[in-house]
Image 1 (cartoon, rainbow, N blue to C red):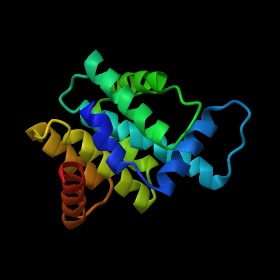
Image 2 (image 1 turned 135 degrees about the horizontal axis):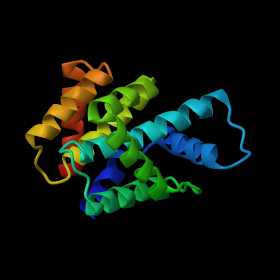
Image 3 (image 1 turned 45 degrees about the horizontal axis):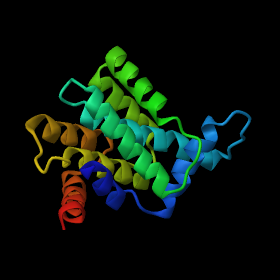
Length: 172
């Protein structure tokens, strides 16, 4: 799938691998996490949720979109060789929370859970990758990108720089 390949380009780095592993570890019964791992786990799950929210910005998440996101999440997890994440259940949870709380409220919650500046930049990059999936950013997606930048306290200059970097990385 196109999204998988594009997101693989964006989801590299040691910190991404550590966060993915911390999240997987947090889901295993009986595992003890360090304070750093707890933060990484929360931020990684919130990063996946922000990708989901970008896909859901039009108000409808079809089964096909859920399957594509699940495959993309799996690609990110696989590239970091992380075991033990139930991505289908995670997507179901995201969908339930979206239906219950609404898009803006979920975005606000994501903004609260991703506190590290680097983690916010990483999440913003991946969300932008989802928005760019069809080589066109629709009006709703552009508004969502702006809302996400505000939720992450990114200046217009910072968000534009990240968007340009993502666009160049994806489309070369």
